[in-house]
Length: 184
Ligand SMILES: NC(=O)CC[C@H](N)C(=O)O
Image 1 (cartoon, rainbow, N blue to C red):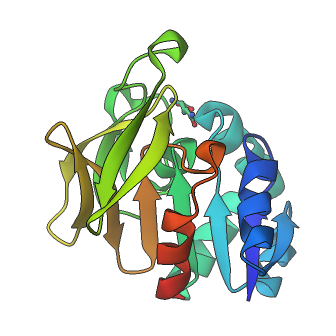
Image 2 (image 1 turned 90 degrees about the vertical axis):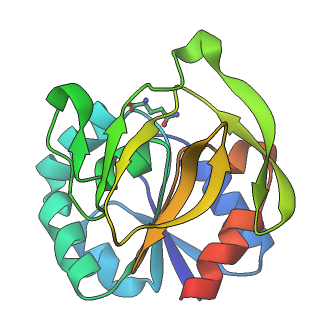
């Protein structure tokens, strides 16, 4: 299994470490042609306005939409979720629109409001961190909700796209990676 990690900005290394510790191969995805070498892609957290700018410069925005239409499994965490969404409140930029959710970019607060907590995922408790995390404020009818925190959806899926509001990789938690792999 070869898992690509989008490597333009953000918590790239931490995701690669989780892939490697599960005995899978990883490729740093920096160019459209890298998408042909992978079985699935992780888009890490970071800064979504920077990431969308870099995606456009590299032509990766269109390439990602095409790859998703071909069925590539994509997991977006935090800023990755924002990029994959259909719409962002306040329209700071147009995201890729690959999953039918509307997001509030810093809905869980700013950097100083970051927190670590345990959440439920398929009846298991998992420790995760919310860092300037996006809140999912609207869900399309095709969306499957996989985890809820304080009454709000924080992990959802539709077809080949899986998104999580939080960072699982900074607490060295591979529960979500294992779930993602089960989709491939
Ligand atoms: N930890 C994160 O990825 C934060 C994302 C941030 N809210 C943004 O808009 O980019």
